Image 1: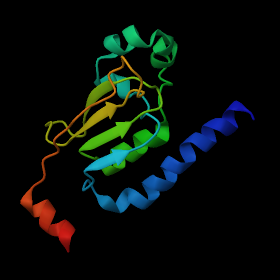
Image 2 (image 1 turned 180 degrees about the vertical axis):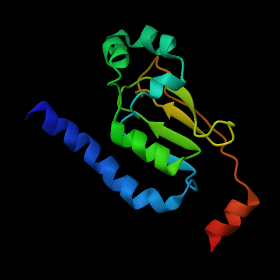
Image 3 (image 1 turned 90 degrees about the vertical axis):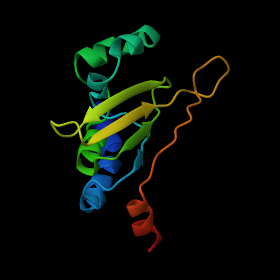
Length: 137
């Protein structure tokens, strides 16, 4: 397969999900994908990431790390939480969707489940009573 074909296959599912999710209008609590969003490293501790994964330096520098379809999906849906894997390392980021900082996505990349790795993360995700009522009906 040519490189262009692989990239098209990687981004196509995210593009389809974005089309289906456009009507959600920021009401998504949790988004899960395999790939990281493109340039998510702009919003987290890239030095710590590079300390663990030095081979990512060129992709980060050239702004090619991550999936552009996943970024479009995150920007369209504006989930409160976004979990991904793919690079097998823990990485956290906070993406502000507006200038006043009121609407943010908390991104967490999950590590591989092997001894000696930081693969467990326990989160308490708060819900409002209004959200709970609307989801029951």
